[in-house]
Image (cartoon, rainbow, N blue to C red; front, side, top):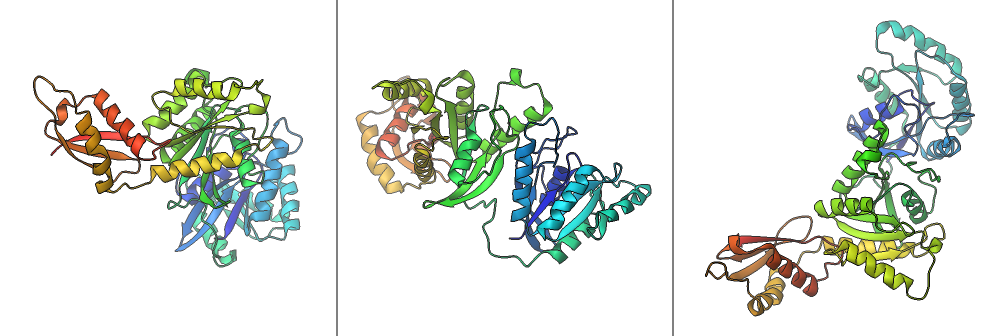
Length: 436
């Protein structure tokens, strides 16, 4: 699929236009300059043609933003990847030094460029757009990304200049498993994403809260194929005092809801803290597969039994969901990051497995016969049949004469027996009692 990159200086409305093109509020929009930091991908459909769109951070030089250099590098990478550049400027402010710098960069790139002037909300503001012909980038297109005026003509011009669609991977394929990397700020989520992809896909700095959006990337290496989603760090509500961080946390929660498997990253030195448990419980409540990754293991002071003791303590903390795979890594040194991939793929395989009804009954009915449900007020529960339900996660219906008398402890017994007979490591299991 052809790729269109939206570039420009900060706060000209790139993310607003991106959201309009992809038809959803996928990128965070705020009046604060410098909200977007990483490249953010989406898909646009116009007049029966599809193309990919990438939103980039605002181009600045000599500013106070500590991410300035990393953002500029991301913008350059996006320009190199793209088939066409949408260069956004703002009508009211005219041509700034940053606009001139970007125009020079785009002329050198040799890529087709469409110059669009944003925030032209009324007929009077059209007169402010003519000055941008001085940039020497050809025709000027007046739009308002906020209310959509002019975007239809702009997209017609984009389609005219774009090459015909080529066969390429879709950036957000619903048929592929979605694996989300979640955790608190600064535990190494973006570093793990970059290490797995083998490129600096997401910005990494020592500053907590660098990643703000949930960034989705197609992954196809080492026999694995899935969508890898890097998310913003999630802190306690009492610690979140910015609107931007609130939206970032909401995006991370939505990424968990959409994912099939979540990789929960924790810091080896701080261990499984209360906020890590909150994120883990959120994964379990949403019925998602889970892999726990203990990062920065190279910085942890160890002796002969440290790893085993640490893992046992962690499993006690996660009880009763203590069969979750736990991987000890150092992302910076690239230690055991392939184990994370293999564990995630294994959990997804368990998560999506369909168990034949005959095998289920063959394994479970003898267990139920050996240990039947306790009698309730002199009435005996007889379970006759079990089958798997057509849900995204493993869910099973047990048919019996008195389903209302089967309590939680016996359901946990059935769940444990299912895990014992069938490989359901890292997956949530739900038990339903049904009247036969």
